Image (tube, rainbow, N blue to C red; front, side):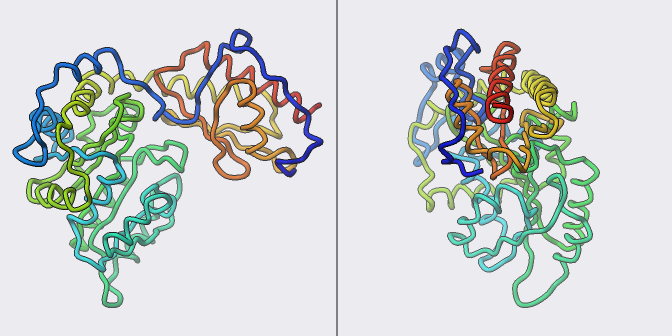
Length: 364
């Protein structure tokens, strides 16, 4: 059905009182800093991170490196930059970087290959995990350009927040070691993965040379990410960060919020996971043929739409009229992400809105 079809039934905008709105399920990036973060930002000790260093940023770098079992850390504006720096600091130009086909680095950050002179090569996989036979085949020396880095992603955003099994991460690490290449983990939501596995984060990061984590998703800091690894790699990444324009001055104002995020926000991520499971179960009671939600491992729910009904843009538009914000994730899928600004009442309100839209679009 065309999203502009004028025959679609209209849904009147409803008050926030009726559905307990607004409810923002677009991403956990919409989270706001906590009062403790604002207080730490106000009192942060600052320096020039482009000259002799910002002490608060350095404190954050050391804290994250310690938690992830690595030697050193580097504060960067975004996890996207962190992934690019990881690739550039561990490879030579014209090298190949192997990435699962649907991973964020390949699907959304492939422009980094243009800047770095690298070749990002997709390896087919399932649920975010690379097929190991395909990986070994891709590692076989062919042609003048060789593989120098393998990248994993956990949790895997495009696979619905799935968590890579430890056995898979171990097998990738072993394959990399046999081939003499390094391993990077895009761990933007690494703490979600650790919570889902009920493990300390270093139990996951031990299978990688470098790891990047994002502070501004479920951890609720306003911005920033941290890349960790061995000292020579991080030193090289720090130099490359300056070349890319990522060096900031009194960045401790932002890093201070990151310290609070790491100190206080990781354990509570289990609450987001429970809300996602609650949301998924409720959505699956609405309309079997037209709306099917996955069983989430973490805080991302995919709601797949039937082929014969309105597409994801129509659903998103109609839900928006009811004050529920979601993201189309392809023509027949909606992505819903839970976070700390939601609670049971928010989930109930979102489900009520979905039910109302289903009644109008599918039965009206």
